[in-house]
Image (cartoon, rainbow, N blue to C red):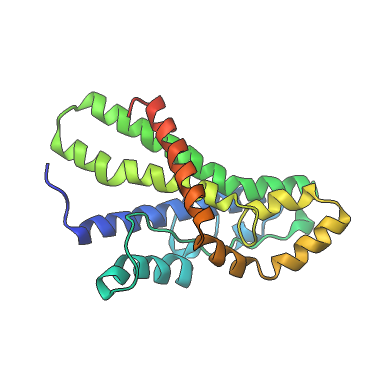
Length: 224
């Protein structure tokens, strides 16, 4: 089996990224609605239609730069696109159980991506079992399902980093005391800057390596 042209492979990767982000944001919106806040549902965010979830920077410009940048001499493409969707609007005052529901809504996105990774790997295992040796099946597994599983798994844990604006910040804050929350809220103002700095440090490389090892362990469960 020959490899796909880089442009086609990149477009497939981008489609996978958009799908992973769409499911992630839709999970936030659906869970918020189930917890009593209809804000996202009224704005059309409980949907797998990617258009309402697209963020001009996180879903369009950044992935495009990651893919096209190397051709322009800007960085090196690692084969794993990263991005984010438009934040889901939430009104915590509508929640039936404030802090608990905020945690549930925040965790729903990463959980949806972990479930997606498991389903995609299961689909790879099933496809290879049903049609072993079929070139079309091999291409779908190698260039669509397996990369999408890896991407979904990675973004799930990336979003669990306890830094604003990531979902992990909503999971950490309720565990802090009053003074801890005050300090955390001050840091949160610069969360995006801290995150950008973190991504460009060896610490993030260690994080990415650890997540990749966990993904390989998950893939081994399915005999892949």
